[in-house]
Image 1 (tube, rainbow over the protein chains, first blue to last red):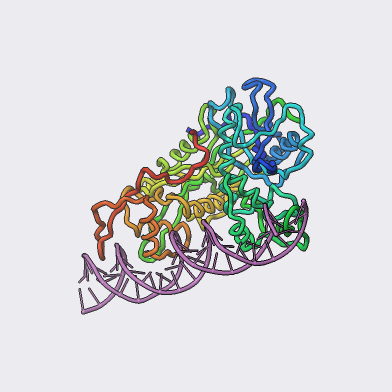
Image 2: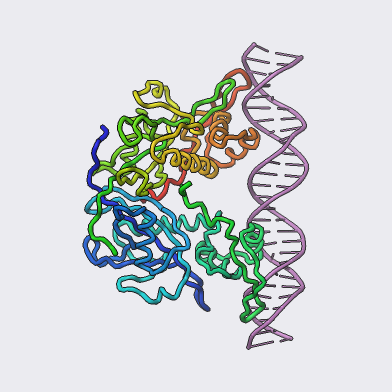
Length: 226
Length: 226
DNA sequence: ACAAAAGTGTTTAACCTACACCCATGA
DNA sequence: TCATGGGTGTAGGTTAAACACTTTTGT
């Protein structure tokens, strides 16, 4: 039967924060994420997703932004709710965790690392606290999925970028090489890129710099207000 | 800064329950859903999504199933988490609502209606309590989206059905007519249908009955437990 | 015989993939 | 001039839309 009063359940927000570690000579670019070492039970000493309790007068997304900033010092370029986890047995006390996932642009402020925070390759994680391995896998699945039908990759890049930069993001997310010729045609015909009149000069033929058409939404972010 | 104790937030589950009202001579099939009339403040007297508080020892999905059964007397053929709504101002007291959406097969037990429960056309709703219009719109968007890439339509149909039955479901969800010839080829080539050796006889040429290949998942339902 | 739904065939266009090829620059 | 990534062209395969056509039943 329907209850008329609510039992004690605590509400937390955790966030899977993805960033891009650019490639170097002998290493492809990869997707990385920050984890926090737990300083108390349960799972003391294990790595866990950044997060915290939801404040009484704080929206869920605001909690995600706040804890993200506390962990990385960054503001996200993309933030979307992932899933609400609330199984009875996922923690010794009853906790419902609203999990978000976010993209942050690569930024050197990351090197100013905080104590108890480390960045890991998203596809090569140690055993994490709670069900956090499971959660990261799902977030990665969502990221890979979304890159196929939205402009989400932009969230990893600075304002100006070359097509090779953008292709590198796609390749890191999808874990496979893409044909440069076909990739160019696809993004050009999508109407989301605005060519600038500047070029990046380097060791070979200069590449044109592009920027994103801000008129085009990055992605559908769920049931947004209005 | 990070809190170490959690404030008082109540956790509820609501569910958008879709069913199919079959077409008749002069009327196309349509998607319908049950609403409950609120008997207390806030929004007393308004129609609202079925739901209830999460029990201390009850998983979120179990709460959805329980409240769904209390409202309709049915078990869902499909059940998936939709979104967690938790804005501070969505209710006078702080409530985080984990919203599910479900499909139920049409069933005459629906006619044994309970007091304070009524079925509405999903595309023609009155103003609902809280942000529930917004939530239903999002659930409809998800349903329409999902029908394009998964076998979700099966959740509305009985075990045996004709291709015209299935097409009728698609047309009701998408709100437009589909070419019978092309529709047949698409579902046949998907490998999700098993032809039986029985036919439905009617006023014209008998139509073959099909059933679903249970080996094929209806849809990806999110981060399911392993 | 005729109407209407079941079911098949065919044309066209759009798209994706693979890969050959040319272009522009630094070393 | 050579290596290399930037950028263009093009042929083949797959898919989907549109629609003409045949089949099978009830009346």
